[in-house]
Length: 180
Image (cartoon, rainbow, N blue to C red; front, side):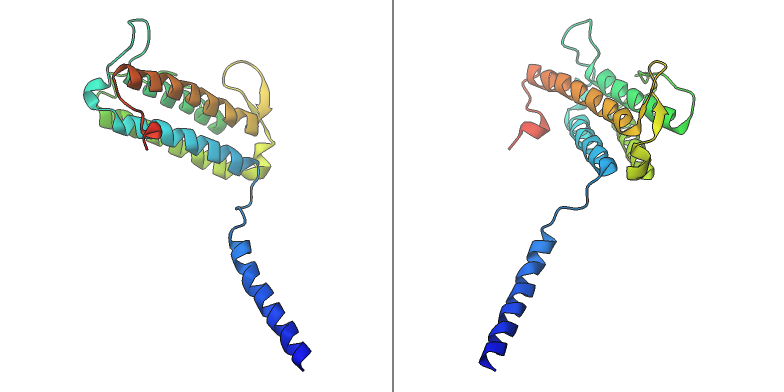
């Protein structure tokens, strides 16, 4: 009898201790969730910058040859839409969204957010199965998997994030992701 109580007690402790372990397991991961995680990560960093930088700095450019802060963000949004439109089978619009159409900080932030939201939705819709399907690359005449297709704008957005960190630093500001 005593042995049975000990066995039951050990089993109860085992079951109770396993619950927190199961709760700590990472969410299922697959190609779509990996791409979505990267897409949302860089999108959040750029949106945080767009919302953070004072509006009077939106037309700052380090040298006359480069885009302004706002133009960089509009370029990222326009590039996102090249991939979104390609995935939807639509005709491509301009890669650089016009500053004249997006005059205020609020308008630039809104179009940037919308581009990342729409891309995220398409990635979710494709799912893991869709990540292996072939799609036309928007720049050139080649086909590639959706997995590689969506990683391209993620990398592109990351490159522009790095440029915008320099814009911040040249203005004596600390980018949101670098603050404690």
